[in-house]
Image (cartoon, rainbow, N blue to C red; front, side, top):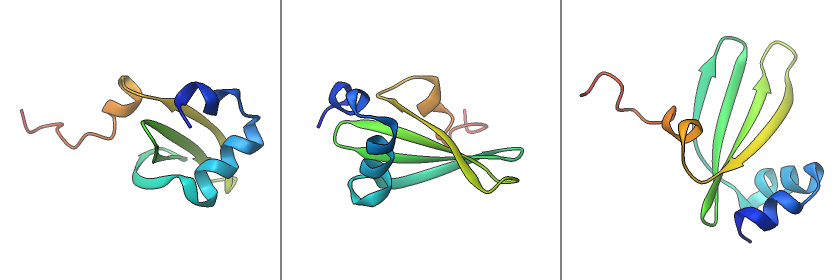
Amino acid sequence: MGLYEFKMLSEQEQFNEVLNGAGIYLDNYLNGNQRFNLYALAMFFVEVEYNNAANKIVGLRAFKTGDLLDRYSNLDGIL
């Protein structure tokens, strides 16, 4: 399944694809009470956003490149 097919799924179907085996967990990013987990699916990435204080999933975003992916880079401060 490609990015565009994934985006055509309902939100519940997208969560099922990511969290029930198709998604490979890669990394996370913390920002205050928000936690973002990065998953790889086929040839694209999905970021799942959690609210730590409420202990619930807030949403998800699918993408291939860009600023969302850059925040998972460990290159800050190296260059």
